[in-house]
Length: 546
Figure 1 (cartoon, rainbow, N blue to C red):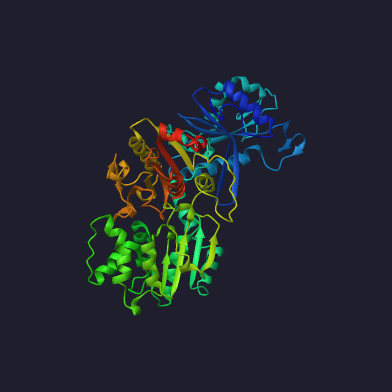
Figure 2: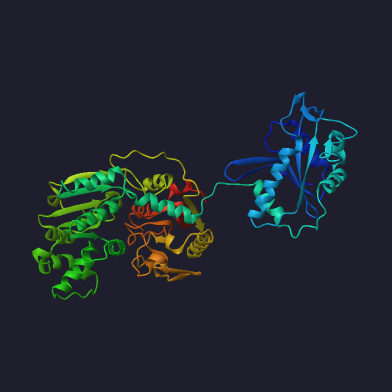
């Protein structure tokens, strides 16, 4: 007999059930399947258990009610070890089997013929009870060595004449109801949804910062990756717009600004909405609006465009923003700050920054511009799972005022290492993409981030990897596709699942900062795909599960 569990009964205090389990394992009909302790709940209130549910694939199912101890029928009433039983032995099993059959029907499964019998493992007898409902269908200890022959006979007595069951779906469903294996698992799509909820919510600390905006025209907000700087920056702009004021959100990267501007457009269908732009794209817009030549011809144009706009293309005083919010302020150059200063004037100016993500060490907000600004610190991290964030923090200086997370290796569910053979890193990235999609992740849940720059990255040049369409972070359809870009162009953005790759090479200056930025883009899990040289060059990766 194929018996479940396969090696021992489910935990039970009934030695009688243990005895019957052992007998079925040794002597049960070879073609039958049996389940010990099949539990069922129905209608939100009723709960019951079948001590043993036995199935003959060619005939139907039989539920055995097991009663231990000395069983006796005296004056029409059942006693167990001398104590009067409140219900007859078969009654509980009868109720259970009817609920079981109803559950199979609810699951769109045609049930087979079914019946109920009893087993008294502690009783020996030559003849069983003669009462009408139990005649010929009670098993005693003397029957145990002969179960292969006895059980089919009992089943014939309790089952009505019935055609053989059609198919085996009812067997599969019985096993599913019994529940052989259950390992806690959250689908990738659900993990992504949970992470989105966690990241969007404003907690008391963030709300307090927003309330302080009315009392502080200028503020410098410091916080590590995932502490909610962008949430505060965008919500601050929304609040001012609702008051009829002009709010301008500025970031360093185009992709972040485009994502924020799309949010503003969705929240404010009218023209009276906040505006979002990268600092140099905004400078270009100002030059175009003022009639100045603005043809992006190369690095020199982008280096000078902010300063040129600050000198020659400022909006009229009555059109300038009432509040300027700078996000990722640690990346702004001196010329960018010159434009910010002219735009803000003596009006509102808030800057959010994280020095631990500063890729250029010589870029800092001008001290004079924030000499009398409120200094605010965000300490609570929302974006990454804590083990992942703790590992990413190993690539950055400690965040002022924040407690250190417990230093333990991250679980493979949040961070893995994949070491590819030389020359096959892109192929391994494709393999990881296949795995994420197979497990239910959507294209828009995934980002592939290269630690290399645009000119050295193979990932950045790909538009297709296997069957996966790839887009740059600032592409018009990036919101519905897998993003493949550099860590720097993806700054300020996030995705549930991040594949970090192209991690080796002498050209990777400030490697720790690159890795810290890339890993902290993930809201659910990250995979580091590297070659042998990349794995060997970073001893911290030795603690990451392969």
